[in-house]
Image 1 (cartoon, rainbow, N blue to C red):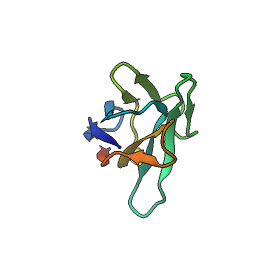
Image 2 (image 1 turned 120 degrees about the horizontal axis):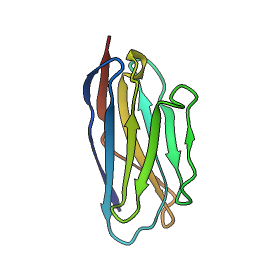
Image 3 (image 1 turned 90 degrees about the vertical axis):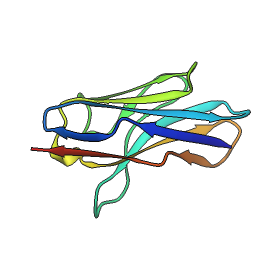
Image 4 (image 1 turned 180 degrees about the horizontal axis):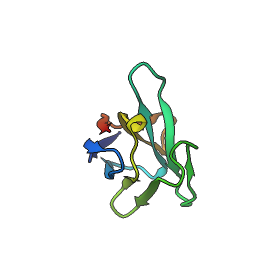
Length: 117
C-alpha cells in the first residue's frame, strides 16, 4: 500500500504562484509515473502534468509554460510549481502515483487551489 499526502494549496490572486507537494509513503514500492490531475466544479477531472521515472514531462496545453512538474526520488515526492495563475486554474488538485508493483493507481486526498481576480 502507498499513502499520498498533499500540501500547498490555498487562495491566491491571479498572477500569483503556488507550489504543491505530494509525498508518498508505504512499504515495498517503486515509483513509476507521478502526476497531478485537477477537477473544477461541474467539470471532469483532467490531467495537468505527469512525470515518469525517466524524468520526461508532459503537460496539459492549458498550463504549458506556466506550471512545472518535478520529482525528488530520494524523498518520494512530486511537486507542481504553478506560476501566472489564472481564475480558471481554480480546482481541487489531486496527485497520483503508479508503481511497478501494483496495477492500481494511488491518489492523494486533494488540495484546493482558488485563484481570484
